[in-house]
Length: 388
View 1 (spheres, rainbow, N blue to C red):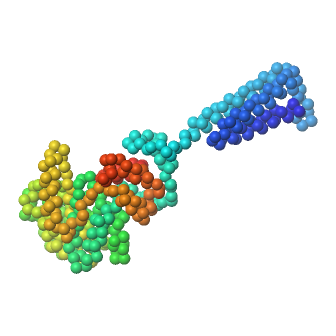
View 2: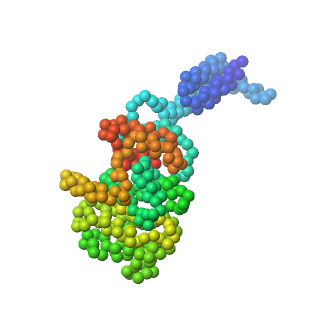
């Protein structure tokens, strides 16, 4: 009987070690360890002077203090190993997430980041291209702007005069909207005609000192952007420029120029009128593909002259109102219901790896954000929470 007890004790110890691999089993581990030690000590007391092990048919007699010392040492070693295992396991187990505890924004730690990711409902999604990853956070609903773009493409009578005037505060990420149209919205509102994404060609607008040479400068800058500086004469006509555009890209083309309000102060006449006239004179591409001219106006405000800037920006808005037929609705802050619509977009579900955007909704509980969040702030939050 005494010979079986050590084996049983070892078995109980092994069970305790196995259970240690499962969280929340510390009471069972302690109990198994206690039984194991009791078994070893029981054997030591009854067999202090003689312990007999039977190996096959050979009787091996071991007497004296050596077996007792070995038993005490082995039992202590096993106990220490189990304790070390429990301590390490306890450190690796994260504390349970308190679902009722309030979330504190702006004070995130690395632990909170891990917990937040665990809360998200993960789904299968496409590997995200770096360009898509860069601009997806800016694609939150701009429904009214996208709708007017779509309408302009559906009007065949003015297809050769396609102009989009995008305007808004610098915090609304005006230029990124055009990239979102290229990557996410184009196929939706131009489906069936041409599935090729448009090519965006940024052109720097001539300054006010060269107003008299506006059109020749614009043509030459477009030619340089097309990487064909030696393929045509210096002073091209409209037909030659359109041929270069068709050779450059067999798909829709968007030529865009960005104007910031401080630059507009230098113009004596309406720069928008110059750009509109330039687009109309270009006419249609021989391929029949769309050529869209995009004017981006960014309202800037310097801290030192904020009052004067706001006054001037208001004048620009009033002037832009005269071009309502080409002007898109002014870019404004994003509201909570815009987030809800954005979640349902196919391209969002395709590239975003989670269904849980509750943290974005929680932002709107802050007093400063209840009346909307600028695109700059919102896109930074999306990047920080879902793309890092």
